[in-house]
Amino acid sequence: MPQRARFLAPAQSPVGLPCQLEDSWQRSLSYGLTRDDDAQPWVASTQLKDARAENSWVKHLVTPMLSRLATELTSHPSIMVMSDATGLVLETHGNNDFLHKAQRYALSPGNLWGEHARGTNAIGTALALQQHCEVSGGEHYLNRNAGLFCSAAPVFRPDGHIAGVLDLSTPALAPRRDAAALIRRAVCEIEHAWTMSALGANRWLLSLHHDQAVLGSARELLLIFEDTTLLGANKLAMDEFSLTCGHFGVLNIDTLFPGIDVRAGESIQDASNHRRYYTRQTLPARRYSGRGTTQPQDGLAVEKEKALRIVNAGIALCVTGETGCGKEYLARELYTRSQWRNGNFVAINCAALPEHLIESELFGYVPGAFTGASPKGYIGKCREADGGVLFLDEIGDMPLALQTRLLRVLQEKKVTPLGANSTWNVNFALICATHQDLTTRVQAGLFREDLLYRIQEFHVRIPPLREWPQLERFIHKLWHELGAPCRDLTLSDEVVSALARRPWPGNVRQLLSQLRVLMALAEDGDRITLADLPGEMPLARPPEPVVVQVDEQSAIAEAQGNMSLAAKKLGISRSTLYRRLEKRQAG
Ligand SMILES: Nc1ncnc2c1ncn2[C@@H]1O[C@H](COP(=O)(O)OP(=O)(O)OP(=O)(O)O)[C@@H](O)[C@H]1O
Image (cartoon, rainbow, N blue to C red; front, side):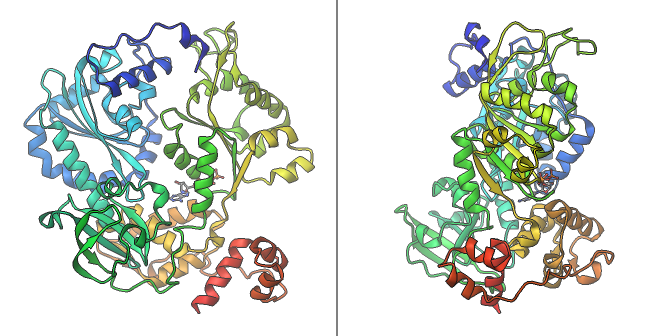
């Protein structure tokens, strides 16, 4: 919390403000916003384009629903607003007249409506609370938004993470009484369709409700399993069974339904929450042919849970791995699940930071602090990250001279903007990422040892894609997330295994762009076959280095079950060892 905030008068919140909005007002104040603030933070059009591409759920799941709601929306001065998980507005639809007026409030694509940017508002506050929220007229923190009535709810993905927000806005003087019901129904439909579309060949679905008549509607609860492992659920089911993201890929069906008989069809089941449900089990056409035992969704699931605890405890986390393997993706995922999610996620690319700018970039500056400085001054990345996460990317490539200055900031957690007299305390979770081996760089004198200890209190290594044990499953997951089910696009088994055999030097980034290409070239309803794969890339992995053939089992026995040691003896990584064992088991 900045020291100055102590001297600010408490925000004069309207009498009778619901207590969750009261808390939001206090947060808005602590972000340094004033009620008459007129700034309207927005992003460049390229960033909006990227965000739209990453949030294809809006196009595939929301747009079709909007055409059904068109009459309902346009008959009243109301608009539907879709934002991503940071509050960045992606699309707006509805009554033309009000769409035009909403632009005066910057309630239009490209604008940021997180609480940090606009104080208390339905989109930002729904994200902060992770639940439905309504903000009307003077309940908005910024005076400039007092003309709005907004009702918003977060949209949860089947893996339990927030994808974004759906909001209904009208003039404050003409609010819609049915806004909350309309938004809740729409979100429920989106989450239902999304969960249904996450069903793959190896997964099966359990639909359930205590009222038999609800089965088959968007109000039913949905649980997705692979074998007996729970992989996902719609939000209604998550709430009913108190599920969190951490349960997916880990929880066994027996924990929810002791002694359930997994057979297709309808039945009545007693659950561990002491309730009785009408259920409908839909089995995949072809059952998963791999191990019959429970497996985590990906090899990182356990490490991720540990990392989340580390981040929540404010301990510095360092994520390493090859380029494109998902270091920043993991950092963002941890942030959205952590206790720091109400603050900002502030990313700095340390390799691209010019030496002469590091201090002004990190600490900020007052107006006129130096020649060329912005006349408005700059708050600096450290204060932007206050209460949130500071993500230092490519930390291993930071020049030595800058490392010394960075260490000082991280140790003191105090910043003095250039040209200012006052000092601000800052508190943030630190996540660093690098593709470099930092220990080797320390030995080579290229990285400060004391900085290494400061940033790497806990370490997570993301293996390169070619070492992932369940790559085929991951390919299916990405294909679904890219919106394939909405266009009825499927990948043939041969394509999936050909893709899984490729070396992917660019890791997830390269795999994603390959899948996007396949999708762009396909017609709706297509099944992608080997003939559709671009030919210029080698289909097989480059030959593996010749290693002395030692039997995996005897290496494990020699290492007394210590898999890391066994892998070391074999000259391979631990995940390669697991993959080889899995292959042997399978075949
Ligand atoms: N587990 C995942 N599921 C879905 N998408 C992912 C996953 N991991 C990474 N991605 C996507 O892959 C791309 C590359 O990820 P990211 O930028 O996090 O990699 P990185 O390791 O930080 O790369 P670099 O070292 O080049 O900065 C991004 O588009 C990201 O959204």
